[in-house]
Image (cartoon, rainbow, N blue to C red; front, side):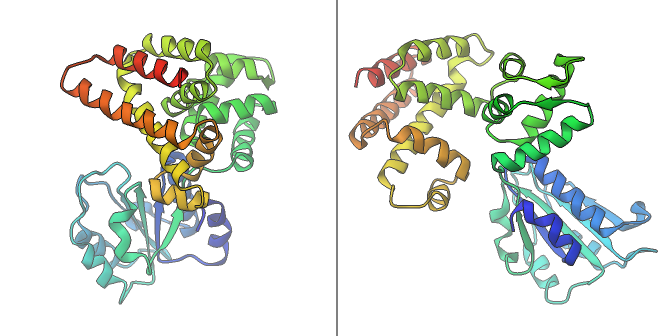
Length: 324
C-alpha cells in the first residue's frame, strides 16, 4: 500500500498489523499518527505500549499484543526500528502470533529502511510505503502547512524547494519554518527566498555537480566544487557520493530495457532517484560511463593507500569528464 492510500483505508477497516517503511521520517511519523488516531485510544498510559529499545525482542512485543485493552476498544503496540542497525530477536515468535492473534490489538512497526528484516510477516501485515512522494502530493502538504501561517508559495519557489530537498518531506517541513520566519510580513514565498534560505541536501548537491559535468559546463562545475570546499566536510564527504552516482548512471545505461520501478529495485534506490538520473544518462555513452567508473575505482584505491589526496582526485576526475 502506498502512503497516500492509508488514510482512506483506515476509514473502511483497521487492520491488526502495519509495517511502515521508507526513507522519509516525516511520512513515517505521519502514517503512525493516522493509525493511532484511527485506534481512538483512551487512557494511553494503559493502552499504548512503545518499544524503542536498541535491540527489539519480539517475544516482549508478542506479550504486549496478547494483553487486553483497558476501557478501550483497542490496544496499540508501537515498535520503532527506524534508526536501528542491530538485528531483531525472536522474529519467529511474531510469526507464530499471527496464527492466533488478539483481535483487539493493533501492531505498528516503524521499520524505516529496515523492512527486509520483517520479510517473514509479509503475508500477515499491511506494508505501507512511506517513500518520497510526487510533486503534486508534496505541494498539498506544503500549502496546508503554509495556511496556518497565512502564507502561500509560488510555483517556481515550490519546485525549487522540492528539488533542493529531493522530495524529502522531513527536510521540506524543516525548511518551511525557516522560510516563514525569513519572509516576515510578506504573504508570498518566492523562488529567490528559497534560493537564499533553503539548505541544499547533499544528494541534490551531487546531482548538481554531475548534471553540470554531463553538460560540460566547466564554469558551473568549479563554482559548485568551490562552494563545497568552503563547507565543513569539504570534498571529502561528497567525493564518494560522486563515485557512487556515476556507477548508478552506468548501471542505468546498461539496463535501459527495465522500468523505473525495476531499476529502483535493482539499484536499491528510490524511483525519484532513477528519474533524476535518467535525464543525465542521455548525455553519456556507455563507453564514457565505463571509463569514468574505472577511473573512480582507481582514484578510490589510490586515496585509500595514500597515493593521492581528495583535492587531487576530484580535480583529476573533473578534468577527465570535461575532456572526454
